[in-house]
Length: 311
Image (cartoon, rainbow, N blue to C red):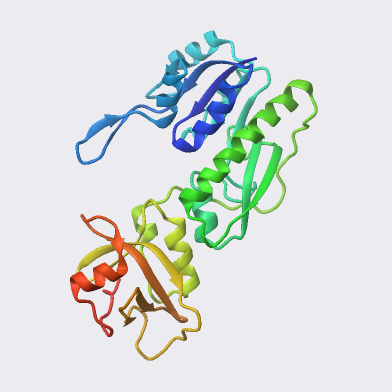
């Protein structure tokens, strides 16, 4: 079977690896162009490109996909199926119509929940206790195609967007192979999505901003769901801080100190919230390395009674 793979970030690599390790013929990997990254402003290749080159898979990096040139290039590859995993762009109708078995997408949610670019992050931010992977036949809508297979997984309090993404990427790779096999032998009928859809737009930096008036659990979920990017952030005495790890302070009740007030600055940094308190365990000051909250407290001489800056 001739397959063209579309994908860009690390989340897509396990699926590409699973296909490459199978008996299927990966005729090309389509990924987004190299981007400037880091303080050195050097061009960096997407993870999918790096893996594809290691395995000798031809790589295509079209700056635009809605062109006659790109469509012609894909047509010449004569794909039986296209597999799409976190490519980052919506494929146009002419591209979707090329393969005889269609275009299969591996999506990081239980559709129709969290259609869009950041389903894993928003599931954690919103406090969901379960999520999963859905494979679907793509149409021209935003994750609106008929479903093929689904697999659930639990979201634990220890999960971050990073750790959950790693787990889901493995589930997605396995489910992709099962989906392709089922399409090939006609044993997986496409099923229309039912139920009320929800959406997961790309995260912006401001989505990580902490409002200490929120309940402790909401802030805790924000910390986990925005790790490693954009990070749950706040500021103390004008210094921007990204909270990397935190815990809900058991038994702490909202007091007279007011939300955003530091009530303890020992082993961690306990901060009052809208309904109790949150303990910051690890943080990263702007321009500095990650550190334990205890080291930050000692270095900045943080004391109980100090208050995080207002929004």
